[in-house]
Image (cartoon, rainbow, N blue to C red; front, side, top):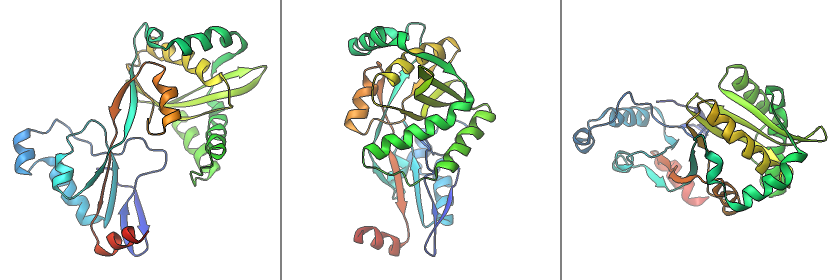
Length: 254
């Protein structure tokens, strides 16, 4: 069980790490339903252990059996993501609007892969949140360092769309070689991100990546942008347990 330790006053929390789309228990094999029903599965043991270590815990799950969490007193908040199965003809699933934008605008851009452009993706992501009146509360330097560390470790690839030499869209795609994640991404307003993804998704498919996770579909306008590339809606719930009564009271007062 990965634990991201954080203090909440005098209390101990297992927090959801920033920019972490999935934060869940790691199981060596699927759970048997009998053990799940008896509440004797390895997951039940992990949750018991975490409860003994942390006064509060948050996990970001996927298509999990949520019953063990609910039976252990966790609160489940429904959330979703979009996931795209990558194939040789991934562009066939693009909407007519995406295909039209690519047809009209692609010639104006140069799409490149260059790990040195991770900082551009970070900057444009933070700028996009600022335009929407949001603040992720993250240190830009720390995020740039994290992105570069992923690239150096070989678990992220950076793609960018440039027009007249200027980067207008960039994506740091975290990947384990099977799935790629739309992890850190940003663009200036306009067609650049559509053009970039229109190039990158077939390129990832050709490189043997089987799945692309768009990392969220919980803001209407952003979800609609992602939907136009032909993905399938998938669960991405948040599970949270607040064990200490003082923390539960503080949550109610907020």
